[in-house]
Image 1 (cartoon, chains in turn orange, purple):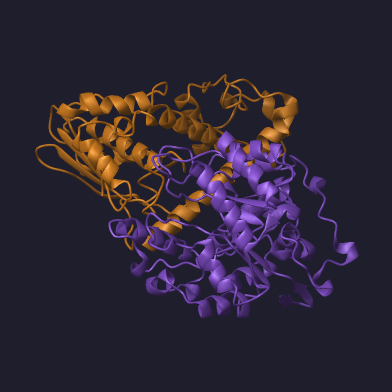
Image 2: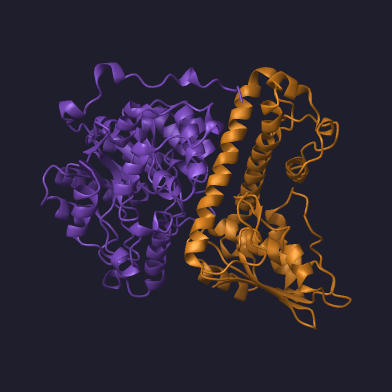
Length: 271
Length: 348
């Protein structure tokens, strides 16, 4: 059992590793935590967990079926249990999800103490050891993890931006727009849609232009407008990136279903 | 050989195993890993058709007779390539070593090819072992796990100087094919197990070797595709692609196939069943019957009978110099692959 347990008193030491691992990326939630007031309802907890994504699949851990328990006591003690499709799921992603879940829940008003437990995973000993020593993931692994986790999260956000570009552009292309036309469009030119909102959020998270006047087609690393010559290949890459993420999500869901009979809290079928 | 609608397919299963993962082979103290590993594999089997699922007990240890029946008698396979996975930290005699494979295979001449393995972090001893293995088993290929842990190291890259030393030695020894596991996790921690940039470097510098990226870099198919399109000696190993998606997620399977046909092409894709994760029978039969499910896929390259013959066996036969009976080769006019530019870059 992989366990990431921190009380408020421990956050100062352990939490700092999480923050440095994500340095340069705007925090999704207020990570400082607030302990005043009455405890939140469980649906509020679940809503907070909906903001936590599997970085690789770019989907909420709730809809993927990874959350099996989410409770809060009258004293504000929150408990979350997570599960993954296999015993050997990559621990770097697992760590990010557990730490993000911790951050999202502990930031809720009225939560005094947060416990997030990831069950049935091979990395339990290493993580348990790190937690027992009140050190974060990075310290448990010689500090090597810090920059890599940061880089990994950013890499996958860029992939999410590419995949989102395909989601937004495909209907436009199907409607007859040619690549040169797409190049002229800004985000504000497009009608509101769920894929568009998602694309803006991912771009904003990376610090890329996401406002109404930002070009629709940009390089996910530099944020620069893509040249007309490069647009066809860019769109091809966007499509294969989306397919890769979605196919991977399909496999993960299939494995999870094979491993566990019951659906997770907030689980949804793949679109 | 598989025959359907008057067409005959020579089948090379280029990625399969003969393992013992039963409790009698678990290393004391590492039981949870040995158990977790095989259960993880077993979950993959769950993505195949229900009638092909095995009990966990059978899955842990299948017999020689099971393998011969499933792969050759029922599974239409002509020649199978054993890909070893050692995992000696968890399994006393290894999970699936070259030795175990060869001991079984030697009873069935002509049916098997024995690939071996190396790990650049094993240094001189590893080089010595590689020489011995090639000499003893006649290996023409190796299976590498770049994300595997080894004495505190959390993985290596094919572009490391130590890896180049092994690739040079392998080439001298007559190895032609480097199968690299870039796909579902094996034992990585904070290293990025799926990055294929190292294959790109090695493939450029070792033009005499072929690099078969097994599992096509799942979950990073896009990185693999973009790299493979630039390297003539990089192949897409379809193990897990067919087994994991064709039945469970047919729509994604069609999309992934479409992308692979576009970026990599039917001349550089090879079938591998990943037996005993999945039996080859339903994969071979399903693949021969397969087509895009709807017009939604009209901008992807088509896959015809000739392309299926190449993917199911003829491409791998070339890689391993396997003699193909004349009647199972492509007829002269069917040899041309679908033109890559049939699919315009963006007309969608």
